[in-house]
Image (cartoon, rainbow, N blue to C red; front, top):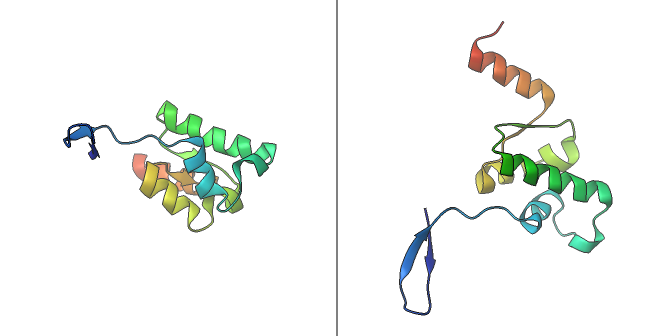
Length: 102
């Protein structure tokens, strides 16, 4: 639970957890880059992650190690926004273990 502070009456009100914005995700995937300087494929990467999060997907599967997997990107996405990112091989291994497939 996140508490917001109201300066109108000095009360604290519980709210739902904040949702990631384009800027939040872009700052994790492309740290230090100005949002207006992102290439179209970088904008697409951010939009794909936002769509995944908004749709309630369990695992975002990608082979793009540089932009999604490389430390600390994957950890930050998981820790800050609950977005789990795996490579195809990791996703297969995870599903095999989860469902006890051989």
